[in-house]
Amino acid sequence: MLLYKQKKNQPSKGNRFLISVTVLGSAGPIRFVVNEDELVAAVIDTALKSYAREGRLPILGSDLNNFMLYCPIAGTEALSPWETIGSVGVRNFMLCKKPQTENSIDSEKSSAISRKGSGSWKAWFHKSLNLKISSH
Image (cartoon, rainbow, N blue to C red):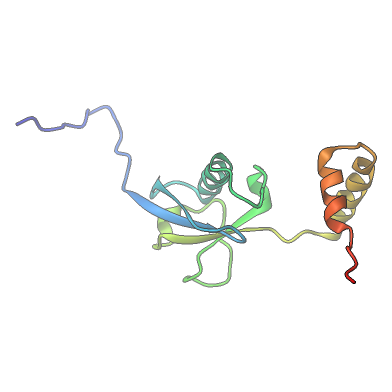
């Protein structure tokens, strides 16, 4: 019988555990394994990459600075990006977009206006959804 021996010059990786991250507005949770000493920011990044890889909707983007990770059991405060995921003591989390400020909303409106004339299929699709069909 062969026993696995850890190399002496290799540091211990710490405990690993399965977490479940529910994205607000998505169909179901994303599950993946993390180290207990991994930072919350790294967990958010991994969750966003897994979400995009699976092709889930709504499309979120990849900037982890636009998101907050909550622990529904621990309270209403978002977790700090610099704390470790294992320090919370739970395995179920909620990923939400940060609330937008007025400046970011204004910049999004101006960029949407500038894109309107581009003639992209997305603009046509959104315009066609906004058409009202009158019923008799």
